[in-house]
Length: 261
Image (cartoon, rainbow, N blue to C red):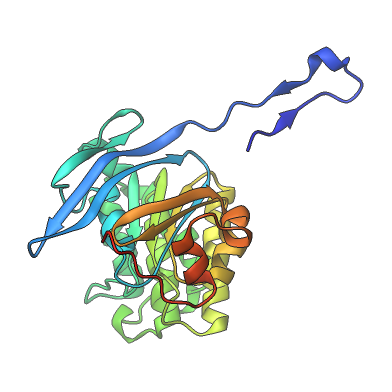
């Protein structure tokens, strides 16, 4: 949907339509095969810069696979991923970060987990120290710096994982159902981190099965079924008035069977 920019008091001829955000990340003809089956089938999508894109669909429909393909963790069987109009390469992956449903915690302290991630990304000295301190404050883990990360609660680990990813200054942050196993308080805390990241200009790509979360956080929505994208659009429009039968059935809690899949 196009927005309109104008100056108060300017003549009508000064009104103009704002250009939509550029496509930071694109998939073109994206396919992935596994176990003798086509799990991702011919996906063409644009992820707009500075937007919060929600990826939804039933369990097993390919949401996690799509995020891993977009992030470059696995190679597509066919098609390509473009970062700023060019094939995704090491530099593009370096500008991204990903948080998983079950966060990966090193056998180190909370602070050492942050320090390792920043060192891998090339941050050293005073800049690394500043980023560590900001991440600890952002995750509300200031008093737990020396505690082993693996003994933190699930919510604390996920806050650390998000803050650790953001400390590396990504242009795009992928989150694969980051609150699926969390209680409401922890979910709220993680969602707040996502809002803060978006406010700082980070492009968000979030896979979730929670329609409420999609409404709270989404700008754009991609709905998947059986490895395909069956509907895209403004998040509120797709959630309120879905056009595809697959999205309608899922949002209404019905089982949708696609004879072509």
